[in-house]
Length: 78
Image 1 (cartoon, rainbow, N blue to C red):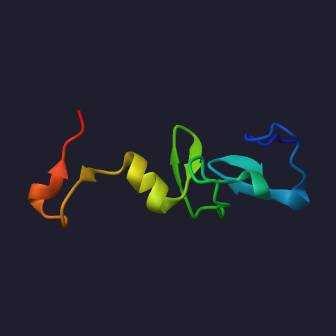
Image 2 (cartoon, rainbow, N blue to C red):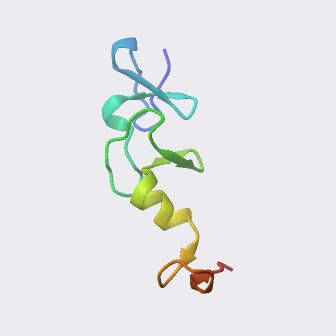
């Protein structure tokens, strides 16, 4: 029986959601930052952890910037 990566309990077929190559309980598949419940395939991944696309993943791992989005507004991360 596969174990849920979030709670480490067994995942039964009736409650299984597959995402990131693992089997999760439906309530355990949540964004690491905002705790929003995610759907299978409807989210992003970083270091094996799920994040909602917007705003969490883009705010944490997307390009940094300021202003209205022109070439002058991009801020390079060091």
